[in-house]
Image (cartoon, rainbow over all chains, first blue to last red; front, side, top):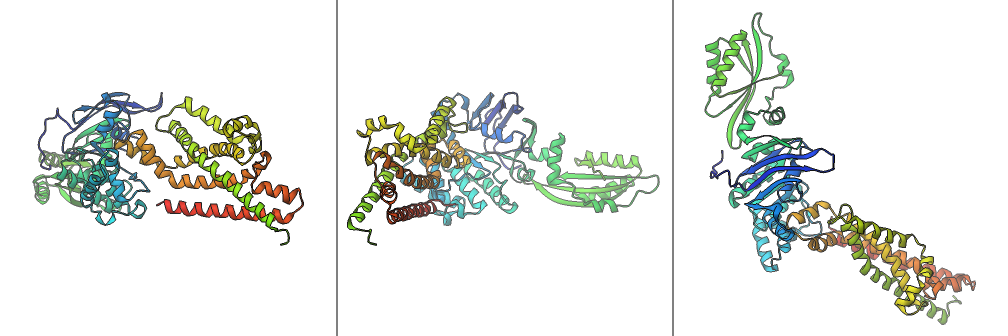
Length: 352
Length: 220
């Protein structure tokens, strides 16, 4: 885990309580009693397939979408209780970045970034000074007078981010901010968001359908399905011990065992009287794989064949994932796996 | 070119002047009335900033009614109104009233279409940044739609040149009227040809200027 001040849970930056929303009368619930707390200073990810309700959820945080029921509290302020003018003011304290950037086509980069300041009534000279601070923050000094059409996707999103941060919000909402970008640009933008969070002490709520995004920058994650949060927790925990089938599928996307089916097919058959099991082993922290494997092999009298393996990291924490083909008496295999689980390894069967 | 006597030249110049005045003034009026009307239609529409079906539907009906009435009929039908506004029901000034009315309805729809082309995401982003409705209209909708609005004005100008040819029916004068009276009724095909040529040049010129402006304004 990244070093983060432990804040009392009863003082979250964003608190969504019992949110429900139905778009058409008689239609399905876009949100079904969703409750969520985002702590100050963390990057909280909401992951889900399209239609899971995550986009609706993030849009309730600044009330672009009004829930039918529930409470939205941002930085201690109950947004649903505000009148139109007070809500507009509150929205200036919540930056938002969009999937399709949503830039003004007829405004230059500088003019786009200045827009929220203009809306807030900041005088021209101050606006120009603030824009001059923001451009280097997102690395766009050279593009100040360019129009969006002249920018790459990544550059457009940098403008979007600078614009979202112009009025010094403490909260940043990212609505699929990297989904329209290629993998390299995605990594760049995510690194920028993390860097800005650290430098400006932002609280970030981002939604995505890509688990890779969650893996690379989130501290905590909630998994949504059919308008509900089905699982949430620290990213490392959700990745290593997913409880719900949907979560497992998401997790498998990024830390799948990675064994090609040809390799699986070529694994030798077990000797007569012995069993063969294919498992994915996930290990975190201090275990040395080799020691565990050789020890298991020696102590339980089984053969362990590494079919695939790699070291990766989640939320800055290294972890390893390995596909093992284990041969030996069925009971010995079972005992070996139990022993490995006891060491804190996460073991799952791979369908051959 | 024996037909092109000094008197004929004067007539052609005078008629061109009348056409320009009728088209120009009614376009300015149509923009002045049509843009607010279009904004009202847009923001009260089903996907607008403040949907108001009770206002939007009747307004749409009125605009459509004005647009579906043939101009020559509209011109005659609103004579009492013309007399009220212009103080007379004949002449170039009087012709401007029905022209402006028809152009307002026409432009309101074209403007509304141009506003509809504005990326709703940009409007949403402005809302998220705490912009008020007025700010969204004047800082987002209108500026973002500007190339489309200019293109709409170009189309309206060209249509008005055509409409203005009918202004002769109420003594409005203009090139169309000259063409009818001299070219057709007095069997002077040269006059007719000259009128048509001038109108073609006028329309081409307006279209080129409009296209150039649209290109300059859009940064896509």
